[in-house]
Structure formats: structure tokens, C-alpha cells
Image (cartoon, rainbow, N blue to C red; front, side, top):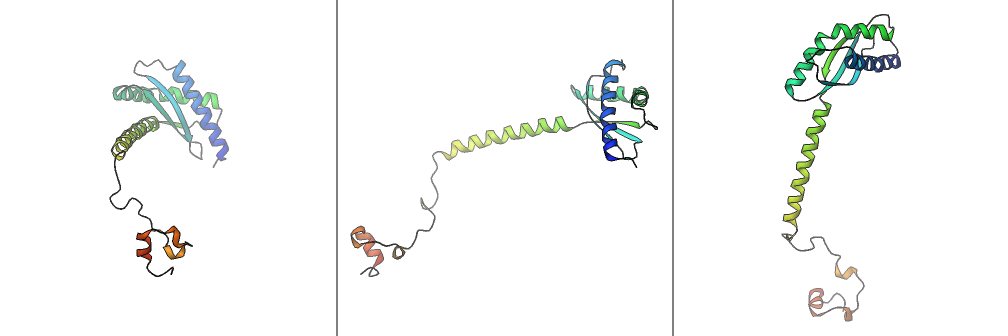
Length: 163
């Protein structure tokens, strides 16, 4: 079991080595515009998972996945040479869904904003279904009032409470 800090440092180094090797050494025509986004190493440093994104559509993503699988041996040998670890970790490539999920979330937020704007337009001329002020008002006998402050309807309502 390795130190977690060492595993994180190794993961960062693997990410850098794989990205550089994809840019300079892998000449597969199926490899599209691949970006290495993250790498994670198991605590025993024997397996590494490399996350990547591909610019393009689904067919570009599938072609790039095939190219990465075929270049796995070359990439692993480069990782072994440039990291200097005793046992070179096996590489597993996983398509990173985070950018796709973020794009989908942005679309949902935009839809919600449009619906809120439409609802605000409907709400502009609306009136409450009940009384204009639905909250309870303090009882009149709790308030210090003179009889001169009351009009006739208030006097009828209060009855003999102030007299």
C-alpha cells in the first residue's frame, strides 16, 4: 500500500506522460482530438485509470477509443520509462462524461430560465384569489386608539369595547 500523496503525484505524472505521448508519438488516424482530463491510480500503484474527452460526435469517440486501446502498450511503456516506478501500472481508458453532463445541465438551466420568464409574464397581471392581504391583522382592542381615529364602520365593528 503506497502513500496516498505518492499515488496522487503518480496519477498527475501519468496524465502528463499520456497526454504528451498522444500528442507526439501516437500516429493513429482514428485518434481524434483527445484531451486527457484526469488519471487515478489504485493505492497499490498497479492500475491506472485515464479519463479522456473527445471533440466530435459519437463516431469520433468510438474511433478514438479503439485507437487508445491499440496504443495502450506504447503508452504503458512510455509511462514506465518516464515515471521510474518499480511496477508500471496497467492503463485503462475511460471516456469522461463530465463535459457532456455539464452541457446537458446548462441546457436544463436555460430551459428553466425560459419557463420562469414565461411564468413571470403570466404573473404580471394576476391578482390573489383571496383577500389582497391574507395575513392576520392585530385585534383592534390591542391597539391604543382614540374614538376620533375611528370612522363609523370601525365603531360598529368594535361595539362597546372603547366606551
